[in-house]
Image (cartoon, rainbow over all chains, first blue to last red; front, side, top):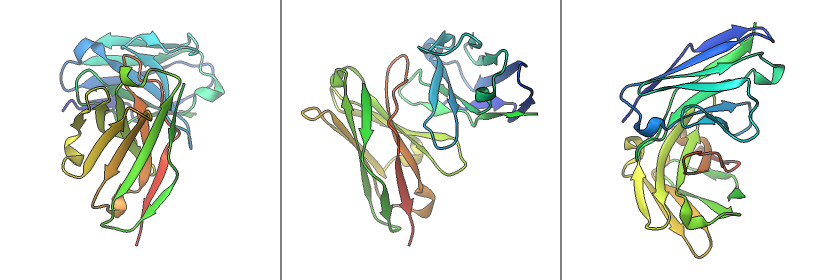
Length: 108
Length: 115
């Protein structure tokens, strides 16, 4: 089983700022099948990025994904009030999926 | 295009629960379905998946022996049964469509295990 470790656990930022969220894998992820989700209370996770760097339809270009192998990152530029939420990475490269434990982006 | 899940369940410890997930708006057999659960205040946890065109399943180690996933291709519905329920199985259970972009989630089914 691939273990995903997200850092930091919490980011305290101001609107207009930038966030860099990290997701490290215990072994290389097949085909870089690593996605990022945003979740707000009472809602299912919303796909932002798939395949490490491809934005899902309708996702603004201030969200960007990068990385390969075992090291991945989600960058959020020009933070909007609606971006303050919890972010999870998911690896789906094999027959078993795993999620990271999440990074909370909160207003400073 | 949507996944519609069955309604809220309340169960006693030791019981079983079956949650359904009906797909519409796409070719059902072209995608597998995963099940993910999320306990209160916790992150999502992947439980397993079913390849609906051949009914092949893969289960997370944490659920081996307690979960069964099945599919009915005639109705486009996938089922997840969890047995020997414990209070810490209380969670929202989601079905998720597989693919290179796992973007389609059901709205979730609340399962509460309480005596």
